[in-house]
Image 1 (cartoon, helix red, strand yellow):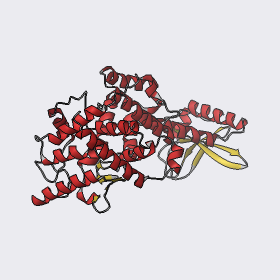
Image 2: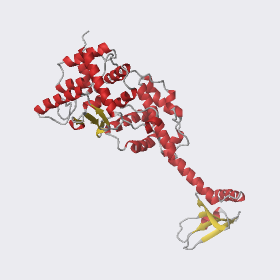
Image 3: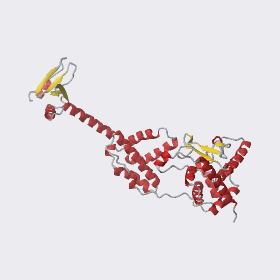
Image 4: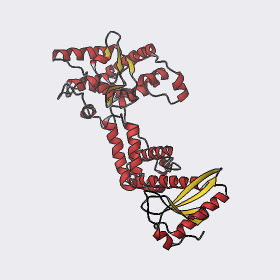
Length: 410
């Protein structure tokens, strides 16, 4: 090296021809036929092939810098490394790092949201968006390579400190899902939110209130039977609910087309609309109907048909196209004198689950009737039985048992 000078470089001007002025050791100044400035190139051989490495333009890259780059490239050749490949890898690494810096938690969370909830109902999308809106002010603008576990914890703790433990744990689940998604795409080298929920206070689950004393259940049934303050739909829904211990949404949104009076069965679909409205696990469930339920439904259908009918079994008094609300059922229970600490709509399921077991009904049949998900994954995979006829006998025996409790005055 040492052949070129800055004075010589300044005299090099384009003339429509290729110009190469060597500095030595493979480094030379280059001007192409259409070039407007001088650029630095280095000629070398690797793997038996002639190659060229570019270092940038002069004077942005000075003569001293070009010589240094040439020296570094020769050092790589001494180590049997191709400087062109090394430079390419360095560029790709720098580009990836720059991209990662631009990929914030909010940007990745939005990608994750669209992938996971693109076809979800608006209510579900709205809930997830609301949870993300709690996290974004704290960590939304943080690039993933610089996101740390303590940052996520700090974003969640204010929610916990307000006493919203369920929400705090849901935020932890969402943060973990987003970080796992980023890791899977290669935007992070680890999941910094793995099991982050363990840093939060545990949720103490409270059972929803229910009356389980047989004598008091009988009193509840008598109050329901004699109550006259509610509308037709609420009145009949509450009369039927003890016989068929369903979740509130499963019974309130019932449609007449789901009920087969001849087969004495009711098939609740997994979904009734885009928001759900069917079974909790989104799998259809067929219930055998006792004689008492058939009689009540027949009576209700006859009254509705006399007044114009409709597709809903329990339409709202304000709009025939909308079902009664959970609040309406709860308000009726409160009007009967039952506080929220004594009885809830879900409590009818607890009554059935508790008293049916105490009366030695088959637990497997009870669980199928409640449409509970099997906790053992192996059992769930192999047990496809529905015990339908056994459940028919169970529900008739249960209905008769409830009638006995209601009719007892002593």
